[in-house]
Image (cartoon, rainbow, N blue to C red; front, side, top):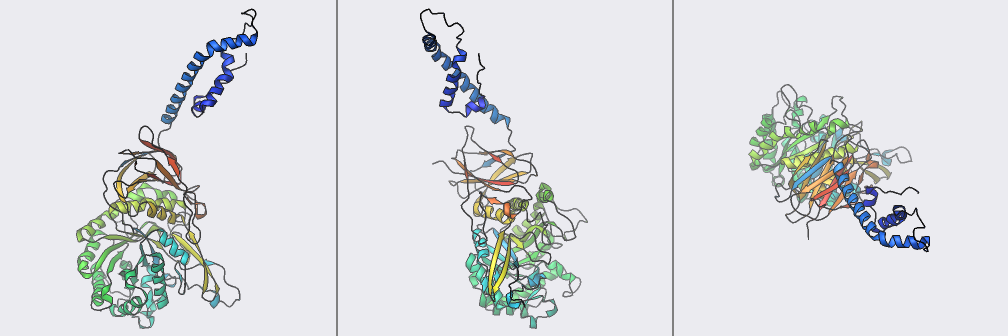
Length: 589
């Protein structure tokens, strides 16, 4: 007798009723013994087989089907129990606590490339050659008279928000250089066309502007000319969120433009002189101000309190602003992907005695005392300049997919803590910058005519995921049980709205089953991934729902996968390494 063809419970569990029936009939003749073919004289072998089949087949089929069904159910249960979740996320949906502002995610951009230490881009109009120069890095907003419309669309993709125009170039750039108190400190000159370009960006994107003013020159009357003759003429009043007086003033004592010593109290007095000059002017008094824009030795609760007490809301102060970078390469250090994604970096506490703040880096818990100062002063506090690694970023880390996952976790942490806004910095350095959310390249094809090529870096994908799924929503209470470096957050826009669960896999190796549990019955879920082949992957390999941005800021509709709620109320799916997932669960209808 030939061997019976057995099927496993796993294969049967996934088979149709027809395939199971086919399996039984293929093997039934091996179950019914046919060794004695002459036990009924006068009957043929086929007649004998039909008789035995008739009398035995029905009960036998019933028994075998019962066995197969039991084995399949057992196999499914055993398979489900065999794989332990790499993370279990529990979400409380019934309370809607803190709301994330709709304009939470924004950009911080240098005012000029020249003010950052780079020569102005020399295009065909300045070239002695008849051939246009090769495409190279250019200013993100474009050029006066030739705006970068693709970059404006990348801004618009994040919703309404705020573009901060500041950074180091803010105190190195001068309006009316010839009348500057210290013209030798003017590395770049701002002109009407530059301010008009800022206005173009606001108009095209729907964003408002924080416009940085030069405090290093320490001349309120000279700066007043920029406000009244430049900003007020070239930028619509409704496009200006606020003026920022000075950038990272703790660096001023290292320049010859302040007497020594120069303290946070001295800085607040300088700031107030500008404010009072603006308030006395019928044009300038319409603008609110933000500050102190501290990053380093003065970014602490004591010094922020000094500023908040001396320059308060009565002086038209709209926000307190601080800066932070997760890590630094300013002194030649190297930062690894593992370090950037480490839980310790995200949550490290205040530094001990003797460890300086001079590098401008902090974990989120180090920022908590600043939030206490803001609450005590009754003012919102914004993370007005930030990114992964100060001094231009770490190549292979700040421009890798790891930065997208870091940025996601960081934004949720800041939102949970109570920051009103976060602006990711783009900078221009002689050696290049690795942390820009969007890199822009261009070539001048004819005098005044430019072609731009924009590249969405991995960090931008993280910002896009956050703005599309979390901005304007309420944070829900979510807990993550995992031995891996996986974190989850949950949001919803209203008590009867869909719930979005964002799971961020920052682990160097882990992947596997994720189980999501909600505290009430809801409908089916839709699963979207932001992923890449590896944490080290660069922009060309990053996908949002299987799609990529083109140079003009356009992206196709993302692909999602349906996830059903099982009998135990769980939503199960497999989370790859180097990925973030968004599970959108709709309410029951």
